[in-house]
Length: 471
Image (tube, rainbow, N blue to C red; front, side, top):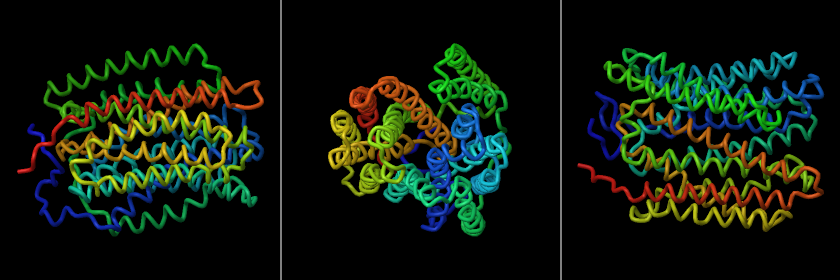
């Protein structure tokens, strides 16, 4: 299939019908915001949950990690469901599941019920989130598409910081952990009502099938890889975790063979190889593995350092990260406004800025203004990931928008999990038994700078590609 230089409207759609309203963008981005907020707002509430529900260590781990595990495993499946049933139905269905299970989590009587609702929340988020990027790909073109992806990225970074700060505010006023969930329910309900009126109808393509063998094998591969990474640190990296990660490689190889078999028989694989062959997708996936790995590890280690070593409250720690989130979002929003000749070279420059800023962060571990400045530089450098997302998908055929969305989001999620597991473990190991984590912060900073350098090197393969002129 011939690759195109930009977005391809759905068949039978007039050009003026492909322009999405600002209200449509607001609805899907607020849905995404709720899903991201839900991760970080719960992290802050774990001590009060443990006290109220008498949760065990394993129970607390599943309350926090269960959502992330299910979300990571089902992202590509959620993208395909949107392709089959229609993106409107998939987004609203995922939002409905997420909202109802959030209500269930807020009223859960026991740890077991709370874990169950958290797992279902992750499934709802996995159904909803891929449709956001897919709807942007299918409803926006040119500079408008770049701005929409910039806002999409801003919501991701903002949800992380706001989640921590809002959790700190609610718990600081003695509201209790239940309100951490319940405060999201009316927002989700209003969003559902608005979405029913605003989101454009689409018929989906149910005739293509779901590729059940591909679904099972990929889900198993991701599950075998993610579970030990998420739980391994707290469990002391047991042997079964290493065996599980080794098996994930074997199962992923089986998934690749299954997808080739499905393609050879004329079927529609879960991840179409034509998506990965699109210019920019493979280097984009590499960047979106290393870049989010630095981002996830930075947020994790910073939160621990600020609250444990510097004894800040969750609210104060969240506010310390605001300059980073603002810089991240600002670069993402300004990038599409730059001259075309500067947009592509900006990507490696961003990682050139981020890598030494990480080292500076390790030296500024005492907090205060220097720490905030280094955080802002990190956010500004990583803000170019908006450009990466746009360039990675700009030559993907519109018919495969869902495949591209699922692949990109899954790799980004895996990158964050890998970053937290590796750099987070390094930080915690070096912090134990020491009065201050200065040395731990410096070691983590070196690791994050290395990941940023790998992202920057990968970006050279992305920016050197020329985009064909539109006919």
